[in-house]
Image (tube, rainbow, N blue to C red; front, side, top):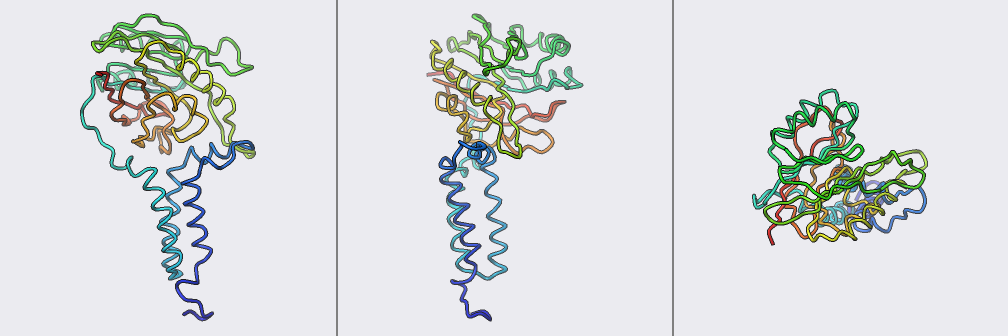
Length: 314
């Protein structure tokens, strides 16, 4: 008992309540409304980091010598473990047919040549780039051409491949009110030893955290358009490479993530490059298996490159 006559099981009620709230947000994040300020999407963007509340509450519970708070902490620990425990232990089993790299190279990248060499040196079969500028594009074409004889560029997105590319076309994912010169989606058919694969490259609109909430409306609208295109794709095997400006937990990307393997098994935080806190760069697939996702060393971009192995065999 303390000076107020409270036992370890009756003190620390506020801490226990905070632990229960943390567990509830983890387990039922989809119940957080997105109607005002899109706070549901904001929570889901940084959902894994909600686990940091556990060590803080643990320290306070020990300081308070509260058995009640310590017991309540089992709830967020269990919820976080169920959601993200598999990502901590995820590894590469080495079973894949091709490797792909996705990278938002940044339109203010001062070293496109070094960026191109770094990506090429990692040895992927496919390289998707976003935020290509006309000047930098010439550098990427020159540096990647020796290893990647096939390329497709539409607007500010491009694809370099070791396998022949055909049926190349732009994909319109423009939100309402955006001009026709905004072209950040494309599709090509890659002829691989494992059959034809539809490869999409996409760069969805940026989002911002503002005083009134999460400004993801245009991103969500673009995701709807991309999801509809993916649903209509005639080829069985599909690979999507892109900066989607959202995580696999963010409901705003449901039109895309519900149609493809979203590879939620790995964290592979890719943004910002200086201190990565979320993975908004993605490699996804349909009728193929993305076996592992990892980040590559930093380039001149504010994003880290993301690489993945992909199994195409039936």
